[in-house]
Structure formats: structure tokens, C-alpha cells
Length: 184
Image 1 (cartoon, rainbow, N blue to C red):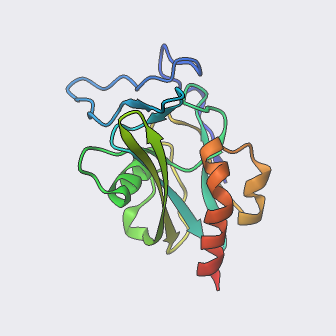
Image 2 (cartoon, rainbow, N blue to C red):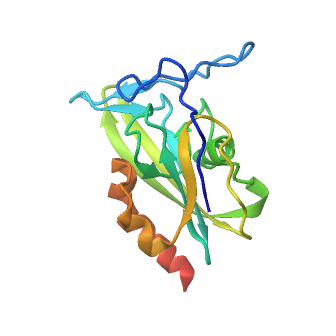
Image 3 (spheres, rainbow, N blue to C red):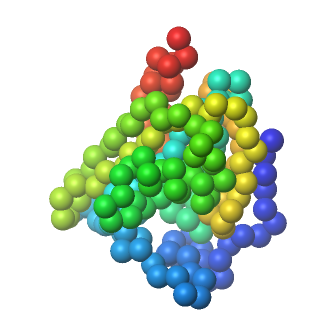
């Protein structure tokens, strides 16, 4: 099942202006919600790195997120995730982000693997960690914020047919191999 909202784009956002969302009154923005830059000018979200959750269910496949148009690489498919908070582990950050964006219930998944991509940036290194988890049982994802156009369970063999987020597309062959090793 794919869940699709009517219109969830925050006011003033566009694909050309992917800025942090406005916060509800009384909430403070985390210092991790910031861009970091490579020497060539490429930008990466998350001052302390970022993490995403690849949720795998043996019968239903992979939980994918169709990214909102206003987000960086909007309109592509990837996994729920985002900036890590200061001092937050990749696993904790990925689980938090996946719950916020897709309603992934932490108590219904088991961590299988962490896949880390490291990129040199102006002030050191930036990392994106894909935390691979197996869902114990099927659940319906829920869009809890405006970061998704849709959420869908997609068969592993059908993932490549989607227009994938460039970072996820680059990692998908290795991630698929990791999943295959857990399928045996």
C-alpha cells in the first residue's frame, strides 16, 4: 500500500530552497540541522552526519519514501532519515528519523547492519549511515510530517525501477548484497 498526502509542503519551500522546516512554537532547532560542504561545493545535510533506516520485511520488501519536492533531491525515492543530533548514534538517529517521517515502530524491528559512507568535507568528514533493520511483522507506515510525497513497501527486485535519491542509488547494490546475506 502506498500512502499519499494531499499537500504537505511547508509554506515558502521549494526544490530550489530546501531549508529546514518551520518549527512549532516553543521548539528549538537542533544544531545538527545544518548543511556541510565539500571543497567542490557539494552540500550534505547534517552537521553531525546523517542516518537513514532501511526497513526490510521478508515478504513485503523495503519501505521506501518518496521525498517531498521541496527537499534536497526532492521527487526521488529513498529511505526515511535525516540529520543526526549532537552526540546521537547513527542507530538512534535513524530510528528517530524513521519514526518521525514514516511511523516506523522501533519495538517491531531488529538492527541487522550499519553501512557507512564517508565523504570529505571542508571541516573534516561527513558520514551517512544506513541502518538496516528487519521488521518482525508487517506494519502500515504513516506520514507524520511533510517530508514525504508517499510511503510504500517495494519488493527488493523492484527498487531499481524507481527514480532513486542519488546517494541511495549509489549505495543500493551494496545494501542489496547485505540483505541477500541475511536472506539465506
